[in-house]
Image 1 (cartoon, rainbow, N blue to C red):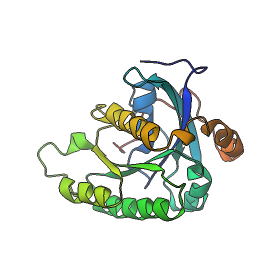
Image 2 (spheres, one colour):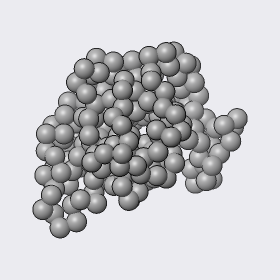
Image 3 (cartoon, rainbow, N blue to C red):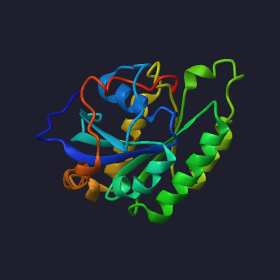
Image 4 (spheres, rainbow, N blue to C red):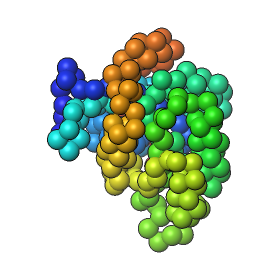
Length: 213
């Protein structure tokens, strides 16, 4: 359900992970309900937002910073996760190396991110793992790691939309419970960082990268 921008409490959310794991696709699936196999790679970071009502509670507006996964942009990440209330750290269920990078990102957030930031570890491309042959990261291994770091854990498919909404709903619930002070702080952070971002227009924001989800 949509919520009005006027009434919505704002939550800054940063998305981190290797290039090609499908961060942009998951964000666009949540915001626009679409998947685009021809979407270009993110440069620097892109910004999207979506207000919604969580189970009859106060309206929430996620301000989503989708960061580029290329190594040359990694040094910019602290600028985007600073003052964030939530983070999605994503990996590709069919690529073990992307899960190793997820471990690094989660630990960096734990050491350098905002106190009590709510983190969700997300394995994307669930649609490719139906018979198990393409999966390179076992669910129990990934889930145990997330639990050890105090993070939420989800598996999802940006292509089909399976599990995507549940990620954001769970993050909103946990931020509301754990970090009520984070609500409303995102607007100032957005304006502070906007100059360094290549904004995404409506056409480019539709869905995922080619071959990424």
